[in-house]
Length: 524
Image 1 (cartoon, one colour):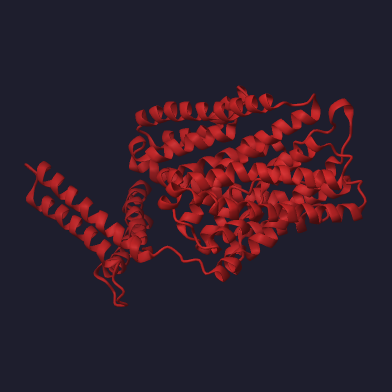
Image 2 (cartoon, rainbow, N blue to C red):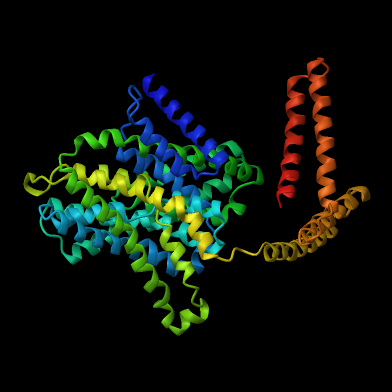
């Protein structure tokens, strides 16, 4: 009962914190970490013991899965080169750089375990960077690159962590050992992810019940992770591959009702988990500090230098990675060199998150032969990297993006593309209607023709810059008034006993669906 109370309490605080962040214009991950740090020192407040397995198997997979579901596979493929350079190359570069810096500062700590900590702090968070990027309106391509990076960098870091930890715990690890580990871990994850997408996709095709569809969707990331971990493959890679494949094929795998329900369900899950993980990160401070037995002078120097290395390595890697690749004529023709401000903003979007802390807590207690190393200092470094990057980079990223004056996506171009495709879709719908209209009442056919025309006209109306109310906007406003009146009549009839509750529920459901379509039109 006490554990359940704590979970509810943490979720309630995370929800209130997210709501407050929206109200005062602060980014939720930053505020929740600060709230967690403050609450960790409140006497009597429940201590939150973060279990690494819970994070890596219970929280990370669903977050990565829903992110992969919503990722555009064509955009992911187009940006595969920068995504791999960040999600694989930068993680390795950062881990090695941190390893050597930390080993120079703490010679008593063997290099392999220092590189292990480098792998821990190397990957930016899968939630923080993209959430902040979307919030401040970064160009779509930068958001795609950050999302793609966050989908694969955890897998790279965890493989490096596994290899470096093995080297620290046992005999020397050779190059072939590393290659074998990468092949088994990453290759196995790719294979299991592809098989998972094939099997689960086939099951989705046969399901006709929206509730069962969404239940399977909830179970999918955990099934894939458990199978991958059982054969010592990368569960992160497997989940990402499954999510990308299923997300790309959702329109042919699920009914419209299942997709709508699933989107709402995963929005709620992601909102709760994202808020919870950042709150839990902040709450760890009270348990981290008392265990450190290193002099505070050493702690301060090492902390500052490690944090600076984490931030600077992203800049050192991104500028050459952005421009040297374009010395190749084929790459330059396909993707011309961007302005310097583009890699600058990408370099500043390197916030760390809960995976870093969970991986740090999974570091071994002792090394080969029972040798000791400053493990608690390493956990502290991971914690300070998370808080430091979130507060320093996360809080200033909007300001940096504004200072760089990045050109945003052109809404007129988006509206023009949508209107053009909507016109083609309307033409196809009209042809299908004429072919299937034999025997249908003429009044029905006319209503459907009018609906096609309305949808096509609405798309073109969004291109207008006139401040006057468009016909579509007038329709939304007037139909909303009508729906409100209908709801009131049904509610009164239920209260007066003229209709049962079941009739009210059916009527409200239909009106709610229509209103949701109106709100979608209004937002556009």
